[in-house]
Image 1 (cartoon, rainbow, N blue to C red):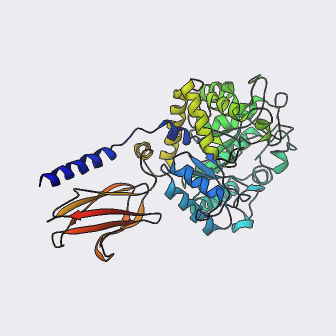
Image 2 (image 1 turned 30 degrees about the vertical axis):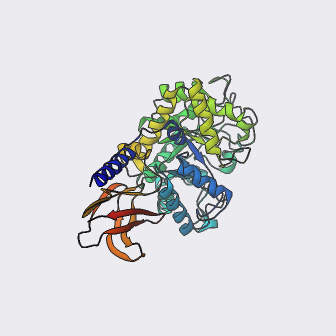
Image 3 (image 1 turned 120 degrees about the vertical axis):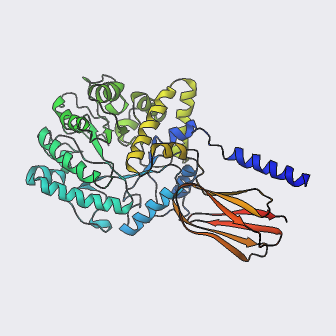
Length: 465
């Protein structure tokens, strides 16, 4: 009897302390600041990009992913929906799953992958210029995004069409109009339609890309002599009416705003102008950090430190490998963690970004802010335990789920025979307790088996009578 009491006491305290909710780690907070792209159309495929992604998700090193056709993420509607669901099932904190769905030439969901062709922003805002038309197309695309499990749209383009031949904007008809007030109207209608189905939107490319004579994808882009503060009007309007979820920083240099750095790396532009002067309180995201404007002028580590210290919350990358073919997310987390410990990046900057990102996810992804904060310390896969163990005649099986899922909880004897079904149905994310009364069963060893769509977990049970 003393042995049983001692064993039960040991199991109880081991179980209790293993379940104490830990503080979210610094690495997990940094991980929320990283968005990557990966190659593959299903997480079931054994390829390096998928294996790396799954490992990064398991460690909480990624806050979001971006889908592209070129990376084989967007083959058809059913495949996209399934891939989105697979990703969310593995993530400890719900992911931002994003794509560029502007319409026209920049529309990742299109006739090439099972959707339909759409009009460009220029066609909608300048040629047609009717509220109904813009709303109709935005509503159509919103439905596609929602059905596909894509919760974040890197759109609308708030750039003013100052230079119709601008290689990155005007030449591709990505701006609604040359008139700031018209751009403001159309992006407002676009955002309203997206918000009706809880799609996060992104104003881009701050402080305005429409006057540029070069393309930041290719190299240094100086807008000092072509830009005017009229290009801030659409951004300010959306910020003032609280419609702006995220603002994407352009890799755009303007010596009158910052004589040293482009907007995406500039404290003067992000913190002083966008945050303090214009009052933006949402998430600041970079344009892709692999663009020539950054990689040809700044070192990899240097650009990360500058961006974070400037006020960036989300770092956007179009790969999940670094230059040595290792996990990009792990490399970035390691760099930022080291810089925080050295005092080069203030810890307050990480906490600020973490809170901005979680507030955005809480608003749009169907969970509370408190649940999101707790989920950072939850396991990435289901867990199963029980107390007491050994037991007579009842034990409480404790399940912890990282996501809402359909589950089965069954009891088997040592010969593998099913002797009891305790649960067969959906359980919500979080902790659950299910009692098993074994008064009608003989003493012996039994196996509890928890089955979910992504995992099978077993727990040995000892019934002593």
